[in-house]
Image (cartoon, rainbow, N blue to C red; front, side, top):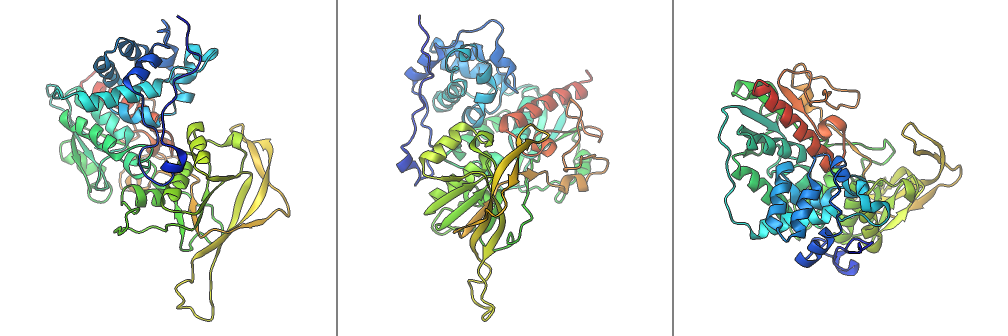
Length: 469
């Protein structure tokens, strides 16, 4: 049978519609489309796609079940490797991982692995009513700090082996970056809640509003009877540019902007936590978080949204799909441009004027690409005399984040690197006995799937350690 050279299109909301709502953009495959896409898989004996998956999902095996129409069987294969299949199917950058290794991708478009993973997970969540089988207890206790992707993965893998697992989350809702950082239109919060409930059904306990380093310390967790601790506290400390005007009203870090919208529901008409809405918005940066912030600003009612990025489109690090969606929705990309000052309103004759201190614009300079930097990307160089002003009243800075120093400052013997990341060995073990770490707390801001891979690695190491292997 001839292979369809193109993967089946993912149906989406029309751009002119979705730009004004927070409903999920991608609508998902139908059963018929999923089976047809699964039949594009060659079921290669050497399984190159598996080598490209950070959590080692047995991709040809789950796709083979889909070919046969056994969706629940496909889900069960997925669940052996990942605790968050519905999340991975939505936000994992498959195009640079598993799909980049796909054999038919050498000549045609690769199999839509992420779309099939999403379909199988959503089908299971909608149709399966069987209770989760709870493993027999092995008598050991482990604590997880943070309920983001690395923490939830570590918790799920340990729970499946019979460990008594408790997850400690600083915020009032479990999910970490999945709930505060990724917008509803890319990852519905009901999906995250369902994945968390599945882990709870396995026996995982989740304690919210517990700030490790304040409410409890890591050392106190051991005093409570936990035998191992995994730190997956993420990278929630925003980076800024250090330019004049960053303290003006109307300047946000992307973390704050997205948290106010996603977690605190600032998009409502009467929010407890307000946010600047409407007007003209500039988002500085070119990663996935910048795309999320820009598209969120649009949905909050902005009349114009700019992405300001100092390199060209070829160097833009965001997923192509997210960039294409942003362009379709009307977001303007100001490439090879870099802010040098955020401008603000000031009336020295009336210091009580409520307009004092608000953003009125941003001064930028044009850039050109010079010699490659240490990572091989051409370094942006300012073009003399090319400064220009951008008429905006809200600026969102999205140039990366760093691990929060709270835990390392309150945990004796926990070594960190120059950027604040926790230092670990190949098993995720830190310099502190019985303490493991992974995800953004170690690497700085990275992908959801890489954090999950770190959680899985640490869970395996904790199991070997506590079981005496």
